[in-house]
Image: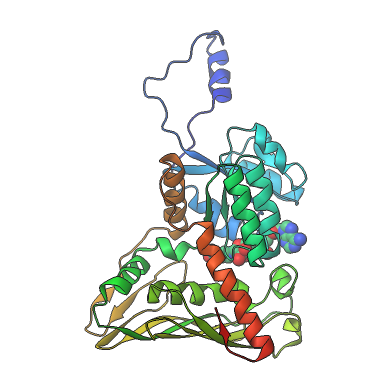
Length: 361
Ligand code: NAD
């Protein structure tokens, strides 16, 4: 298991125990390699179930801190991940991270309606920002995050884990290679059947609930990376059949028109399960199914080539790539602008559904 490099404070404690004078210069035979300290902001199911465990597998970053509004969660998190008291924050004092060099990155894992507010607080504290998908509620919020990160000279990356996944990267390359000729139709569907009667913030419009924001950005982002171009126009409709989703879309169906003539037929839903990405081309087809699960993304082509390169942990791969971009000051795979491109289209999807007409982008 990867551990953070020993801290200066811990080292001083050990030296004191050994009777070594604390004024003595600290000499490392092999200076520890710098690893990026990540603070998870929001300790809900994705942080608890995926990101914190993945941060135990990463090579270039580690779980350094937490930000939570639920004090009862703190002891367990501190104990499980050896998080020192000084690296524990709440939403009101999170800006004080500005004085904490152990934290390099804030990873915003809150309901979507809160992404902009806390991304901006993190950026203003001088921390790099990793923001979960979908980036924010609207383009204005996305622009505010991007400008806060630029002003503070920190990196901004959006948690689109699929773009780091090897089979997905193969499919993205096919948009340029065109092994089966021109792409004619893309099918992209991501949904699950929610059977309970409390869907938390996911049924709350102000917090960014609804299938389109939550799951719909998977087929939307996938349609764009599969086509390798940006849509020119779209048509969309939404459906809500259950009272739980009276304020948000339970299902959204949308169709994107690309400059090459390719059409993407997309769907997202809390009413039915789906997990398919398929490109139908002039001389064949290829698909990933599932295309957005945490594990086992795989697929095939019309001439029987399997797309099934394994990966240990998607989130660890994503965070290591993003940590390396910080360490090397190198280009980011999924920058804020990419998250904003989707949100611009999401806004048009809702407009088309509301007005019942085709929208030109
Ligand atoms: P969750 O409901 O399990 O957790 C949300 C957390 O936010 C909770 O700890 C909650 O206490 C906290 N919170 C703070 N203020 C809140 C408020 N006003 N209302 C509600 N909760 C509040 O949600 P989650 O599934 O962990 O999702 C969090 C984010 O992660 C979302 O943006 C979601 O889209 C994203 N996500 C991404 C993936 C992925 O695969 N990339 C998967 C799941 C979730």
